[in-house]
Image (cartoon, rainbow, N blue to C red; front, top):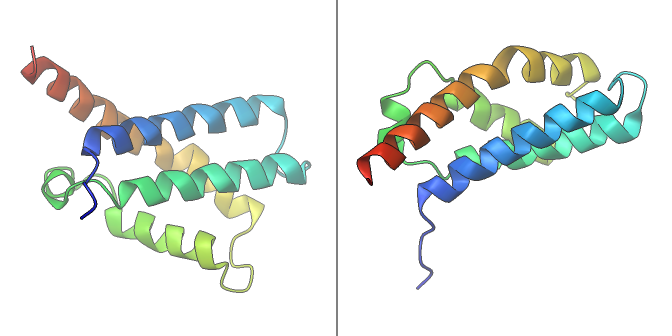
Length: 117
């Protein structure tokens, strides 16, 4: 039987992906550099996959994050569905949707750390 990893590890992994995406954006424009575009896509895929391992109870108390849309986005990234993802969508996700997720994850980790003192 495989032991389940604590959700905290997945939350930290999500933040790591966000930091990597921020570093990718500092290197150039996703519209002009396909290497940066694909690096950002890979980190979005990894981040989205990690959200699948957060507990349902955690997601239920954070309705401000569109968990089902993240799952749908992950499915499109993983399965490519005939190229439905374009740079405009990727840039929009990064600039418009990662911040609420980051705030949620940071608050949850902070509360977890405070409760463990």
